[in-house]
Length: 426
Image (cartoon, rainbow, N blue to C red; front, side):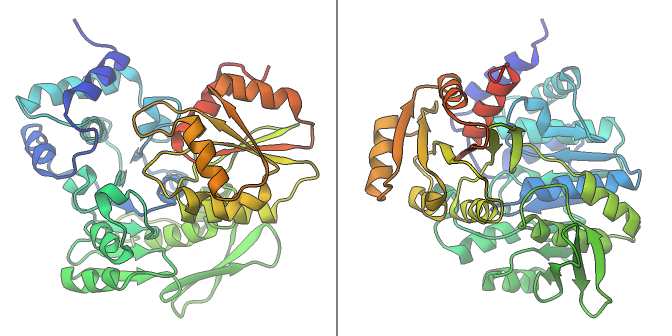
């Protein structure tokens, strides 16, 4: 009897002893059994602490504007697992994913795979099945030992380097830079969008023999002549004016500049025009990144879950004030830098509403409230047991010109989006 997608995913969560188990040995053996160790299309790999999903969305949109059929693999998902694998801009259907899972299960024998490894192999399987023109992989964690690093990148992009996932990658930017540099390949180009790159990034590129293009050194961006345009500059070339990305936040120009550098340096494999780039920038879309779910009051969700992404959220709130009050709908995981997340945004919220998350890595509400108070928050702190009650309470008490910002974890954004999808705002 065949499994449904939900049944497959429930089973995968119990299969491996650990949900995160970095290394390429297991996934490489299964890929070999499936004849998936090499792909017949150009491979783009995107790593980084923040901005990976947005950058993949921009690359996907640019290449689709040029009529290429894209295959994109991202994680985690926010509402449906199908978000992780997109073919030509459309989420893979349940039947296709289940077919891929069945093929993987047959090929693995007694090899135990993680949930993420199953998904990674399924993406490659479906990219081949549907004859995509380019495969774009987002690294799940780190780079060097991440499952997507099984495939040699024809060109790679590292958005930035910051401290996150300390338990797996450590708390040193230089060492984290080495892990992310693991997606580089000899003789291939890698674009680094970090305006303050680590020394290890440069030294690893030299050691591996990769061509490193750095933001601020090889390419840059600046504000344009009006609010709808910005200026991109590559080395000594004439500056080029582009439309601003459809994605909210000034920080998206960092991602856009890096994406343009990649596509311009990959013209020999996938030719594109400036018209394609412009169209791609204006049509890019990504779930959960400064995404507005409602007006009156405004409900904004953002997956800010580390200091760098929290600083970007703070910059957005500073540049986009409202007439009413702004309140936070927040939670976080215990292994995150809570102070680093809270400090940049603390001045922007009149109230903090805390929601209980599921899982062993989640704070209990009383513990999280205590931690927030210890950080010196002087505003009102309220606790909720679930997103349904939190959303109903907020939408009933806030005025039309107020704003709710849900952030702190992918799980927060997922919970809020699922609440709206189920009609919580009706």
